[in-house]
Length: 415
Image 1 (cartoon, one colour):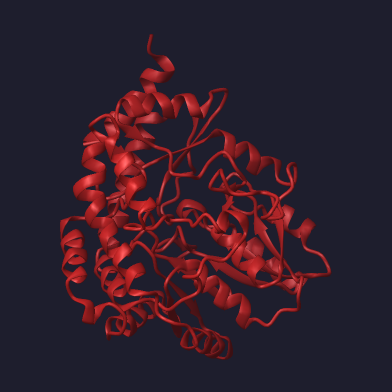
Image 2 (cartoon, rainbow, N blue to C red):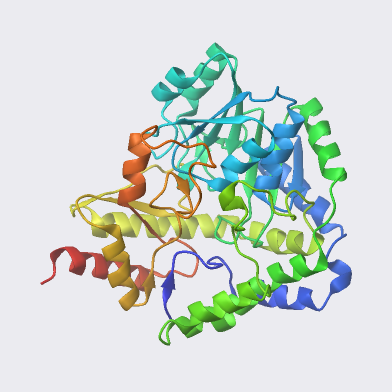
């Protein structure tokens, strides 16, 4: 079977058959008690007072920003090297994103943050990139000094801790994503958490006024793990025919895309924001029960990559026992990553997860519409050119990881 970094990577057999079962259980699609059950379990796990679910992490971020009641064109400080799913809710809230360069952790650089925070700055959005916690002590100090609200973007970092405390519990609010390639996955979905009672009430009111997604949209998500695992991935082994199957399913709206084409132009698709449907809450709840298993597996693979790639011509991620590894990012100097990915594809290794080649990903996002100007974040621009993300998900065994390692060694040091 081919190796993928993305494409519903966390799904195991019981997840796939659960999704298949739910397709034939329409009474469970929209309303149901699993939504509240997931929210309760989530708040208990993090030790926070409030957890409020949405149909995506970006719907959750939009709810936070709208509930803060910030003045129009207030500045939200965000890092370079992020996703348009982070930038768009800022734009949709009629606020202004201000890009701050990153540091060696691939997170917002506190020194640059302090320089960029101005009179119109009202909040800082901290992304714990690929599961590596940002430098929260320094950032919190800057927030206090500059009177900034801290919002945590934990889309990559469910289960990570910073100095013994779980990420997502440091700011006034945080949001998590259950997207198709996140730590846990329900294809779409997300949760907002906060300990602020007043803010929680506003976010809950925002959620109550939303609709559930359409039946068609729900079925698209339920079909994703089924068709991906039974048709698309297996047929990638046959002249990459699976890729054409995927494109056909997306073109005919049998499956949805992770990022709608409207979002790449700064426009809001019609399914944002909406409530989390019960069917996806059931998938997320099932995955949430496996969180410890997933994180243990990720850390084991990260250690395996560390042991086998150390001393080679790569910049490896910082070893940190408190982090999680949604990805294992490599920085490649003096090599064209397009060439590496092209040769990897010939060995049925598909490493392109979209997190490369642009400061606001994916690469075909309109950077101007995201209000990013080239040269604003030089470190982020360099990382975007040099990064390769290795898979760490539950379907990558050490044997499959060794195949990736062997490919990289052969690419660099073979004849």
